Length: 304
Image 1 (tube, rainbow, N blue to C red):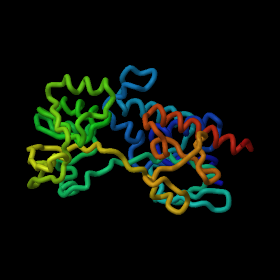
Image 2 (cartoon, helix red, strand yellow):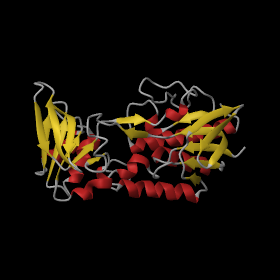
Image 3 (cartoon, rainbow, N blue to C red):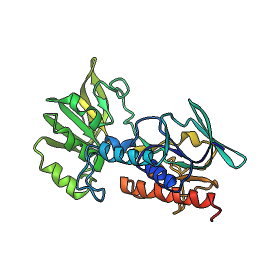
């Protein structure tokens, strides 16, 4: 047996799981194929995590990572390409070889959903982005659009006003879905304007993006809007392809669990945004991770 508890994903849920598992003195390994911190690390500011009036997402997750490592969590910077079960043990396949573990906590998170329109792939990195915190500074003194009406879209649009001369929010409905306090801040920002009842149906340009084609969802009318950038925040897709054949997923691809984070397969847990749940926030992801680790430890000691 290589490890007692393996964690797939290094976002807040995975890091919290690692922290709790290590405190139980378990032999723990965590796999992360991208950057530690997950989507939380790319958030400019977190203003709803207890104990911090406001903190950068990268700073918050960096503190989590440091704490987990100090307690002995082994971190492997490689993606879990597959997960199988042999006898009662799980085998995690990675580019660094196979690792076995008695218990596995899947905290692989989600990936941004694409618009699925012509020009999106062509202008990726040349105007199209899914991370304002990562790419916002490249659009200093330029005009950009943000697609979406939820908290993420509106908060990142506000962030982009630090750089861009004008930021337009494109939303398919006639009102935003973001929380009221976020909406109030957005409407008070003179650099923000709103394209309600609109969707983007195409992207145009030369070497770089120069225009977005907007469609009025009520009239069907099309219009071209000059823009240097389009930031997409229309939802997420769970990172669960590696679980194909091992678990039955929800129609959207999320992992069903009980309140103890247990999946239908004994010994396999899920935590954070990747599981079926009503609220996806850093604070709920951390709670999920803690519960999953405690339950995994309980099973290892023979508890039910």
